[in-house]
Picture 1 (tube, rainbow, N blue to C red):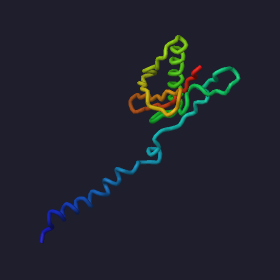
Picture 2: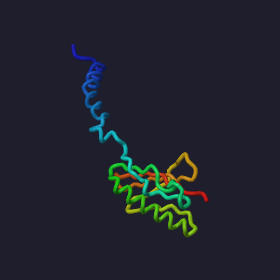
Picture 3: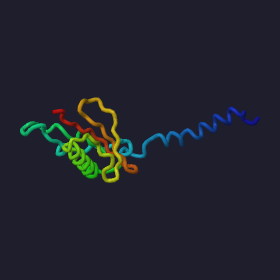
Picture 4: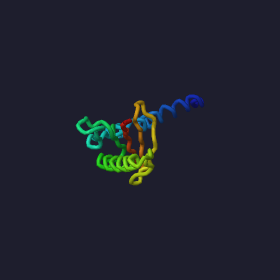
Length: 132
């Protein structure tokens, strides 16, 4: 007796299950990590001389790139932003070294959340500004 149409569908589903499960598992532990955290302490400054360095770049991280690239781009973004700010204009740079920056929501006051993308590489950081 030949298998019923329902039995054939079940057999086909059982045969393809291992292939589907293999696609869902990351290729390596490195692929499972979503981003790399990068040091950004040297991209911060104090409100006044002698105070702690709190304002500037925080939570710098990069997907599909190096910390060296993230640091260089964040520093250039910061320089452009601070230059516009000292000129009396609050203008967030839109492009830096081919990265297109957009503002993303944050949960902190006086903070800009930023995401810059260039091809498969994404840089994210928060920029904290003084309010005084």
